[in-house]
Image 1: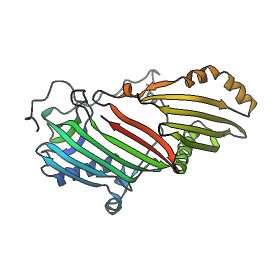
Image 2: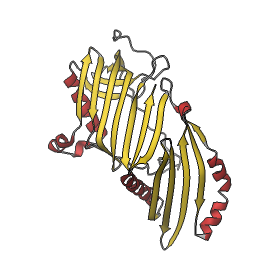
Image 3: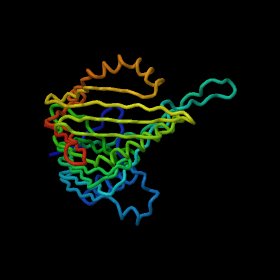
Image 4: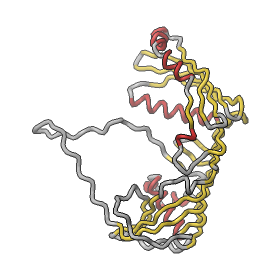
Length: 316
């Protein structure tokens, strides 16, 4: 059940998902249509005609109970989710041509006042993609989440938005996610991303070979060979390692080796040995990286089933 609407708190609101105009959606079809509109905006699909979007739009259905959303099902099959590498780490500053001093940043616009805030719960979210294309990589996705709390936020200009309520141990999130991709397509996607990243630095990827093998359900062996060039010059390096996730959900890196047949690169790698030795002992407690209210019951990456890599995560 959902509590009655409350007066908005005095603190400033965090980032919100725009959800059209007030009032709240009255039917599941209306809610699904607004999710559809938001997804189209997020995927930057306005360049498509309505007919083109309808040919590939997600299949969305919802069931409401007052302000609560009992069920939301989103099928992203055939949807392409773009991914762009950042082109710079620091935004360029604007300078006053007369003094040469940096210009002050433009003040952020004042947010519209919140006139109504209604707590609600998305009781069950189902997400599938068979496949969904992420950064050019077809990925088969199946996910379920239960108990997502949020607020309906209405502002003075008549706009409606959704504001997620932070997770807490007292109200944990439950669910699972599985995602799998063909190994060859995964390597091709990595190739494209690496080429784009190197191009930003004025470099060119001349060759890339990647191998991904599963020794057990919770361990992977990775190998990579890359040749990078700039103008008439090129250099190559080879990396091999083994990574695993144990029952305490700790990521471990073992047997990390980085070598090169190029003598100049090989000498440079000598200075990296201390870092490599430290990396071999790397332990990342994945469970500690999760926010409150989320705890792993299962986490595995499996590359031992034919030519696919599969990730499975299940929350308690």
